[in-house]
Length: 222
Image: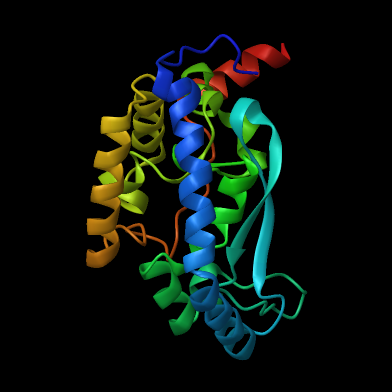
């Protein structure tokens, strides 16, 4: 767990950030309710059901929660019943949703519930938890966010190690000024469609552990 990890104990980090999360996500859901309904219908028509993609993700202190997103991929499988690669299942419509970050809109429900924050490290897969080294695990000392320092600094074009370094940098420097800066950079990145895919994948290659984390896990087994 992350109880010993340093987080800035400012008034904003303790209270202000969560207050803004509740207010902004509440009004965002009201304002975006009609556009989200239209998107849900389009997803149902173009990709089928279910409309929402749900998946368990680790949140603050590695507490598991269920993430909500609009579905962007089909469920096409090979003859053995295995899902086809992401680049095959990701349709043109799905690419549009991701490029415009429209698939992320249902996550405002997660923010309102307290599972997530507007700004913070992106919530990744539960299967990655055993692969983090001690420094990388510090990303879970705060609530995960709709966007974060890594997302506005290159997104999927960054290596995993670069992303985690930025996540930890955010954890150690949480402030209103930093959050506003990330919001503005995120808006610019979305408008420019920056960093949607990595150099070798339609999304992002799976994290398989850094050399340091692999060594730590081996030592723990001994």
